[in-house]
Length: 428
Image 1 (cartoon, rainbow, N blue to C red):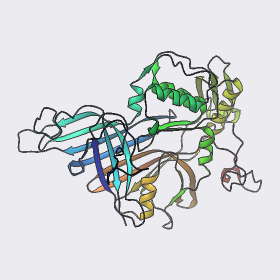
Image 2 (image 1 turned 90 degrees about the vertical axis):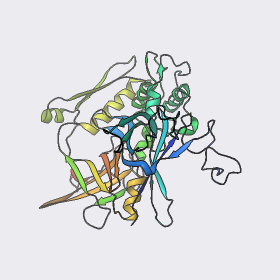
Image 3 (image 1 turned 180 degrees about the horizontal axis):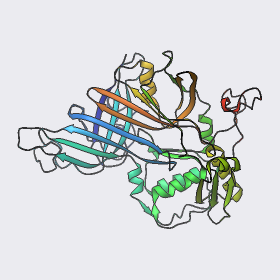
Image 4 (image 1 turned 120 degrees about the vertical axis):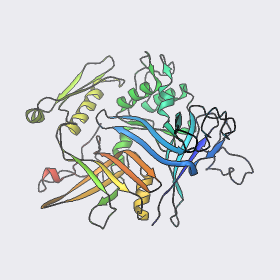
């Protein structure tokens, strides 16, 4: 069994790009396809030996249904005050400024498998020192870190001249990222399924402008562990539900977990949905049966940039179909990586947002509960004695009927109870 080992590096060089620049004729940094083209040199310090604790947080807010900035907290032992900006004898003197790049790895030794996975890439926003009384006890420094959402949220925009009518959602996202000079090497952007209206203008952050496009497309915009901006179209999202899942259970025959968090409540119920495009007529849809059972629970999206009221109506109906009924949910799954199997280790460390997973829980005197879910958030909490990973999960909010798919091409079977079926519907 492979136990992951933590590694933490700080790059004190300027520029937003992560990774080692390509250096010709270098045995270490001259690998095509591995090292990157960059306009700033790196100045990397490996601080792994100083690290006492690491916590990383990435993912979507389940209630608000939007992605939030990924964060990391790195606590280090600093007996020599190397992380004191005023210490002229520190090897980092003059370099300890905000927004230096930081990257956190999990290293492991599995035969035939690459030996490390990045779990967080971001920027240090503060160096918080805890001084102990006297000079004989060690001091600690906590590095507070945020991912690339911080950079995009710091950019104010009013007008977007290149944000013209008729752009696809992906073209609009690229246009906005270009405004921030966000490197093309650090983005993966789908072309998108919806055409956008011209950018409406107005004072907002660049991140807010991109998230308006994200909602208009009914897609996803987030930062991955390597610091890349990812924009996924809704057709891309719907097809992810057809990929092979990682399978977890408590049967002893699949990947095991430590704990599950179940929920059965009204938090996610929406049975009165209104979606309004910019300059359009509000599109309202309701589920009378749900309203009779749970009373009216309204939700709305406004000023999305799609071009027709029909598309706004399609989005409203999709939201209603996903949220009208209460369901027994698995909100999170805890994994202990202190002594995992190789397969469990790779599943925990290589899974990212929208990884499909299948979870089964045996129930006393009842049938087992099985759910197929998307990973929507990932936390890692690491100390010298433990590595705990939490997956926050949710059922796909948009699915598509895919011909010839054994998972996403299922029509209703009248001989199987509705609650036991995974029926798929045509989506817009």
